[in-house]
Structures are given as structure tokens and as C-alpha cells.
Length: 231
Image (cartoon, rainbow, N blue to C red; front, side, top):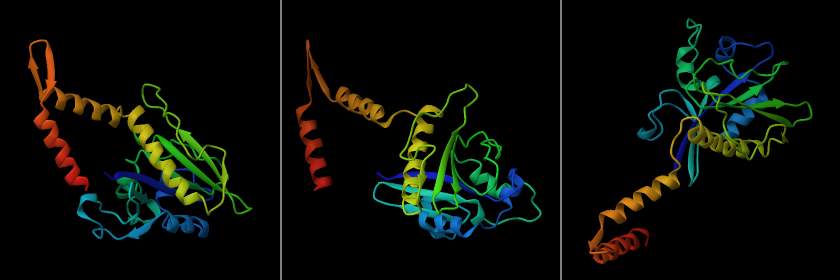
């Protein structure tokens, strides 16, 4: 089963301190564009399979384990008359994880994009020596709960471009898992699987007196069908 996640990506230029200026960006620096290109493949809307149900142009990456959809704000259409850029914010603002490319002289504030989501901000600072310093900021919810530990990128790390795209993808995926389990209170899939197995066993158990015996014909049929499926 493939894991699918969505991440918002923002470019912050020099002198940009609010979401209006950030959402009006239609591109970024050369180094920023290099990262976006290496993060995944750009797709026009409706070019991917229908299950994604995405309207804006996106950057997409997939392997055998997971799919990652990047809502890159600079790749989305900019509506000149819309000061709030609601079409961009509709997607990026609802993403739990944000990757921020920050070329501003000031540190990026996690509350810059007003939203009830965006719990984790992975902030990239390009350095003059060609490396990239990473800072990770976590936002608390209304109850003061903070996203739990995740990696492989940790705050304070300095990375080369050769490692940055792949490590960013894995870190974003793990950050999303932490948000799901800690903030949104989703159940751990291992616990859910155990509950399902317990229900199956209980349903197909034959109770005779003090003994409980599993229905052997059902088990044999279940195992044989599983072998055929994965043969």
C-alpha cells in the first residue's frame, strides 16, 4: 500500500515578511528552482491519475513506498486582483507540513501564513558557501501539544544540495506522521491491524463448552487464498 502525503512549499525573498508578499511570488532564485526541480516532476493539472483530485499544477514524487505531492506556491497561478491569493492559500494553507526556502535577512516566523494547520516548518537558509542550513519549527495546537520528534533532518544541520532533496522528502513524510499521531490523534496503523485481526479471530472461533477453537476450515481457506494472492 502506497503512502500519500501533501506538503506546501514557499519561497521567501528579501524584505518579505507577510503572506501577501510571499503568495505573490511567481518564481524564486536559481538555487531554489534547482531544489524544486530535484524534489519531483512537475505536472499540469489533470495529467496524473484521477485519485489525486488536484486542481493546481503540482510537483510530484513517487516510489514503491510513498507518493509525495508538493503544493509549490510559486508554480501556482497568481491572480493579480486577489490580494490574499486564496487559490494558493486553499492548498498550501491546509497542508500540515511547510517547506520554506528563506532568503530573507530575518528568521521566518511560523505564524506568517495564517492557518489552523501548518504544524511543522522545515526552513532552508541558503549559505554563501553553497551549503544549506536547516531549521525546524513546530507549532503547538490549542491545547499546547507539540509535534513529537522526527527526522532524518534535525534543526541546525547543514547539508549540500546533493543530499537535500531526498532528505527533505523523508523528513516531510515523517513530520506528517508525527502530526497525524500527535496532533490529529489518528490511530497507529499497527494498533488498528491488531484490532482487525482480533475481530476476525473472534468471528470465526467455535465455542464448545469451556474451550474456544478457531474454525480450522476458515483458517485453511484464508491461508490458501493469501498464498495465491502473493504468489
